[in-house]
Length: 157
Image 1: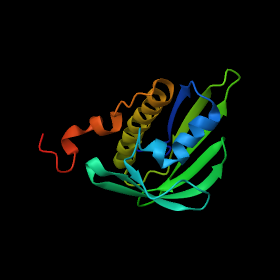
Image 2 (image 1 turned 90 degrees about the horizontal axis):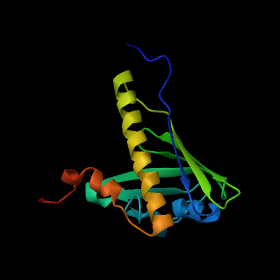
Image 3 (image 1 turned 90 degrees about the vertical axis):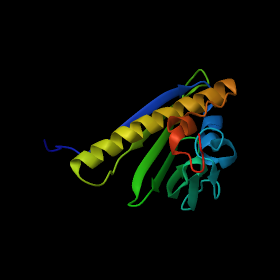
Image 4 (image 1 turned 180 degrees about the vertical axis):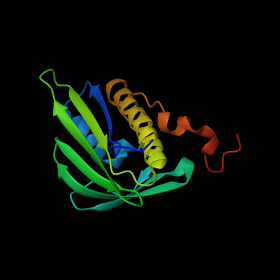
């Protein structure tokens, strides 16, 4: 079977917090490190390049901020080769926020692109669930770290 269209991942979640708070959670690594990666070389800013680290896995990811529209949209390219990921933030009348994530530009064979898309869908779903728990209930679920506990660097357990 041959792909007719390149895979595109869409994940979304309602977060019961104001859009400014939800947007800031992705821009400010002091917050983001509580639910996603463990370290960042800086805050997200238009045109800036940062490095995100998942220290438990020994993984680092170069990130270039292509667009940053306050409280509305973040567009990055990450990885090698670089692929785009876009966050949009939809404020709702009840002071909640709909966060949507779209990832595309997967590379490789058809099978490799499908596998990357499936992995990304799972990862972004964990990310949004972790964000929701943190912002709505002040609970760190550790979903990203606990998803592959046997892959932790230097972990003998």
